[in-house]
Image 1 (cartoon, rainbow, N blue to C red):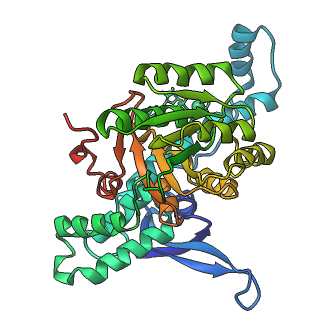
Image 2: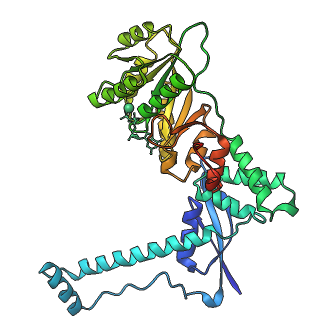
Length: 395
Ligand SMILES: Nc1nc2c(ncn2[C@@H]2O[C@H](COP(=O)(O)OP(=O)(O)OP(=O)(O)O)[C@@H](O)[C@H]2O)c(=O)[nH]1
Ligand SMILES: [Mg+2]
């Protein structure tokens, strides 16, 4: 006989954790779903995840996870602390430290149990369950993952649900379709140069990425490129760009005010492309964002802003950054540091929900090599753990 219980929590992982704490690691995940709780007539109701777990009744209580915490004997305690500290702590202190140790052990076991659950089938048929869990492992938003798998189930005939290859191919296409890409440099009206400003949080790779593109546009596409920096807070920032400008043998203008910025642009109206480096801004520092906006919107020329985001950023922070910078506003995104993470769910969550297209991805510190036009299929392959098939740079 089985004992069934349901548990509710904000996320699937938390609900499974609750279930495991209560029923032990032998519990089976029977089903999970998202339901609404609280509110009035459905208004202001909160979405929670409900999981149902089952446990053979004879195993109830045999859970090895929650152990009774017993304080050590007084004599032993004193001996241990006399040797290490030279004084005797109170019983409370010792019990607290023992509890901490126990909690650490419980957490380690929980992580192991959760790892096991991630590989167990879900309510989706055949191999679709495993693919759903793969999306969750990649930190794809639960709602997005559910929608993707439901669409997949509709697309594939039921007799192919056990056939992982066509399932993966279709799912990869569905994921790729969610990422819209576009070139970063658009042809300008008339003969004016395209002007691109690289904006974003500190240290995401704005200057490095701009330098990679400057190299590509001058050396491979034969364009006349000019660099302008309005990042004059740190001497090192100007020096960094100066070095790249010297290597590429292209002009660099350092400007301190919106008026100087306009003058700098006016000096290079014959160029093909003006790349503008900006100082990293915290999305929460409204004063800094406003100052940046006054530069970008303060000339009579059309400046396209590119928001540079690091793929290593937490999902919630990515949305926070986009929200903070949308007042400038920006027209395209670049995703950096793909070499520093194997989890691209947060980027997918963001890119599928914002109107701006992704133009480039970067995957290393080497200038000019480590940059590519964004390829949704490659991103989808990483999310589906087909990473070994992904080659970022040819050769
Ligand atoms: N691993 C890795 N490192 C990168 C990548 N892009 C840039 N970096 C490194 O990230 C660090 C910061 O790069 P910068 O280009 O100075 O970043 P920034 O956004 O201009 O920084 P601020 O101007 O200080 O806001 C440097 O060490 C770069 O080499 C990338 O794709 N992968
Ligand atoms: Mg910089």
